[in-house]
Length: 343
Ligand code: SP5
Ligand code: ZN
Image: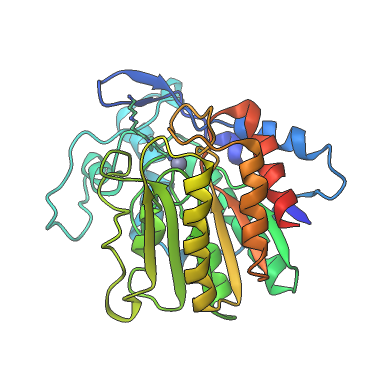
């Protein structure tokens, strides 16, 4: 099984994020996540580790607006040029003002653009962020290309993650929506189902395909009434227009354990089976693990084997992309467990 890793993820390494109480927290989403996973996967002969290929930016433009991509690429160098000295290359940019809901086009002013495109204080933009995000999207496209060529299982160790990124917004460690980019690529070949098993609701992925019946989006996550991303991930959000009935959320109470989790997963898989996709994309976050510092669920290492087996029972060409998961020492084991269940 090919497991693709992004070649340039290290260029994105913010120092801190800001939590509700104003405290600067050491940035949870770090390069060490990938290094730890790679170290574990190297022990398994079924894991063919490969550097991801490069793809035309046109594949990313199918999901993200030209204005947003240009913002991500240019905001940091423009800021350096206009306001800062070279010694401040390591600084990250954070929004300090947000527009009203009715503002539809991006403002010209740089600082105003930050508020327009950046939705929270967990998506700072550093000098290497754009390069790393593109590298992560290419990792997703590499896995999708394996399925297009007839492989049954492929993995993308995407970093930075993607599922909170919207068509023109970054948030929650996410800048480009890797899953949506890969799904758009595969949707030319047949219907695609996305199953998101990160602890947090897949609000970006949901937004991008909300009006589509070509890509079914499903997500199991902590109830957004009390957990990030707060404003989306509720059961009433089912899609609109042609997409009505093609988004399904499965919120679970805080502190949920393996039993309720697996029972709910069966419901999501039933919906996917009814959709009868040609391809299945699993957005896999491991912040559902019992030791995760950001999540409250209590999944065990063995739960991921069960998840893998249940997903495998759909018997579809399947790609797995990394989303969240912040207990770094357990990440490799948990991913390995999921993949062993899927094999
Ligand atoms: C990809 C992914 O897993 N992104 C998750 C982003 C979560 N950001 C949470 C920010 C708010 C954290 N509040 C914690 C309060 C602790 N008392
Ligand atoms: Zn998450």
